[in-house]
Amino acid sequence: MPHKHHFNQMKNPESAFALQEKLRHQVIQEDDFGPLETVAGVDVGFEDQDQIACAAVAVLRLSDLKVQESVAIRRPVTFPYVPGLLAFREVPIVMEALASLKTQPGLLICDGNGTIHPRRCGFACHLGIVSGLPSIGVAKTPYIGEFQPLADDRGAWQPITDGGEVIGAALRTQTKVKPIFVSIGHRISLQSAIDLVLQCAPAYRLPETTRQADQLSKGNAQPVIL
Image (cartoon, rainbow, N blue to C red; front, side):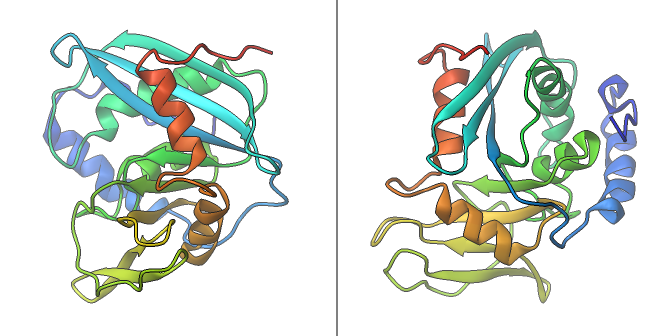
């Protein structure tokens, strides 16, 4: 993996905030990938009073959104809950899940924010940098930022801004359904992130990548093993 950073050994928020400030400058906000055959949904759930994290990764074939391989692992949480630093709880276990896959996905669609973050380095950015894979953040609520009302039709979107900077997009994936919030994770432009999320959400509000990973993380689906 191109970036280790030993972030999983961090125990205090101060050093984590400092690392985030460094990582934000490594985020590549333009397309840096070839033809995509697979995309993976990444989701992390918590159990036992948030003491156990369950990381789920579902690899889908982009052409038909069928699950090709999936994995779910559970590990004790090693970092405290701090708003804005959720990646430090979640990324180490997701990296373990990714390492157990037989096929490396072409791109990650994360259940969480990327650049929609006070330091522009949310979970999707952090995971993208550490894994080296292109990544997108897809959240059900915007962490920060403002946006104008959207048109009702599928595909309508508005930029999310914070301090005059575009940090993501409010995107309506289904007509007259509440929008989702898309942001750059790593190695992708915002427009390409929007296009890919729409491609992965043909029938429901959330993309199939998120839906499949969520079912895995909750124990409602069995992993698919190659």
